[in-house]
Image (tube, rainbow, N blue to C red):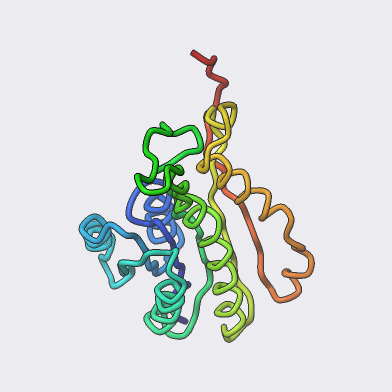
Length: 204
C-alpha cells in the first residue's frame, strides 16, 4: 500500500516545516513543500528526503496556475493520491493604510494604492488552494482527505487593523463559515491550526 501524501504551502520554514517533519517522521507521509524561497526550500527538502519522502517546488501561491500545477505534480509524484492539503503560506505587512502619505504620485498628487499582496497570500491563495484540494481529493481511489488551514492569534490582533491582521481574521472567519457537514459528505475534513501565545502579554 502506498504512503499517504501531503501538500504544504509555505513549507520551507516555521509552522509549515514543522508540520512536514511531523507528518514524515511520526506518520509516514510523503510530503511536497511549496515555498517562494528556493534555496531554503530545497535545503530543507534535501534534509528530510531520507527515503524519497519529501519534494520541494518553488511556487508563488498567488499565481493560480503555479499552485494548480503543483497539485497536479504532487498527485503524480505521490502515485495518484493526495491525502492532506495544508494551507500555511503567509506573509506580514509590506504596506498599510497607516503608511506615510508623503509618497504621492508626482503627476497626479494622489497617494499610491495600498499594496494588498498580504491579502492575496494570506486569504485569496488559501481559498484557491482549498478549491484545488477539493478537486484532487475527489480523485483519490477512496474519495476524501484532510484540509488544514493555519492561522495566527497573537497580540497583534489588539492593534489597529492592518492588512496582515485583516487577512488573518478573514482566513479564520472564512474557514468557520464553511458548510462542513456538506463538505464531509465528500469525505473532506477541515481543520484550523491556530498559533498564538500561551499567556496574555501586557501592551507596552
